[in-house]
Image (cartoon, rainbow, N blue to C red; front, side):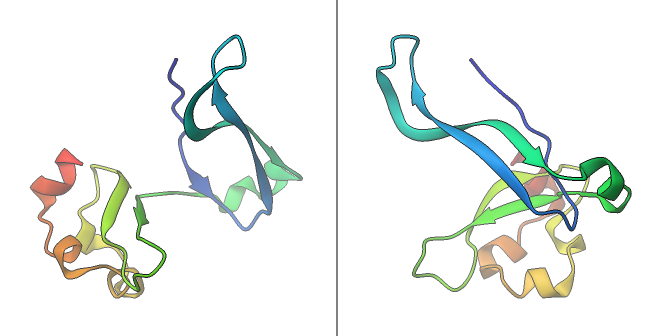
Amino acid sequence: MTFTYKFGLTDLECTVCLSKDVDKTGKKVSRYYIARSLRVEDSFDKAANAFEVQYIFSKPGGNWLYDTVMYADKRYPIDSLPQQVLDMLDDKLKSTSNKESEEI
């Protein structure tokens, strides 16, 4: 079973409800948790200020710079991100061309 979630951000405080990855009998399938629902108060009132997420990056806890692209909106090359974001990326990501971004 697959779930796809479109990410968007606002100035809301929200809670993502997660559950362990188990089969129908309750047997653990993997070490991951699965997002099941999102709880947000006053979400409709604040949704006017929402914006789409173009990238999600990750890094090991001991690293200062993000070195992995977890999600990329193919419409936006990495070099179109604000300088403040680019300063937090490993050089190998900043040198990613638009074509390579589309393959992510």
